[in-house]
Image (cartoon, helix red, strand yellow):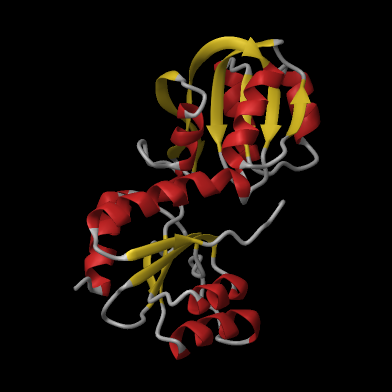
Length: 250
């Protein structure tokens, strides 16, 4: 029999959450039933995911974007309905934000680089005093070829800004909303910066920094780490697991 605390303890330790400062409350956020027979994995905590998880028979949901972000919130409106749904159905919620972004083995950023067969992978991109991204070297190839591989991995269409080298050999990745760390990539002299979502300043930052950028969508750039975490949990416990994809192009 697998208990809720068995899973919480394993994932907390595996992702070393105590060593990663984060505004998100990583770990158990809503307490459900004591025993766990099925765990649903998803990218973001939302009522649509919760309803599908209940229909799938889940005792626990594990996500990258949880419900708690370092501030007090009244249990009203959409937030209140989300919490109430979990409590009423005795479904536990676990969230892992920066620890999953920056994990060197199953984190989104490391895995996206590894999908390109990158070598000499090392941390970069400072976020509140800690490096959460990775960069590495790949076999020189066209920007189109690299982006195509990333699109295949993420099952998403990229927004590409081509203001840098035509042959790509040095690539940095900060998934999700990591566009603000583009200057770190420029300072390193990278050929391509890969992220999730971008905002208006990015085009001219790329032009002036002479760098290419590929944005795969916040959601789609962060499925890969959740799927890898699911495999780790499945290999550790005798529980049923399922990834539920709430389609999101943003």
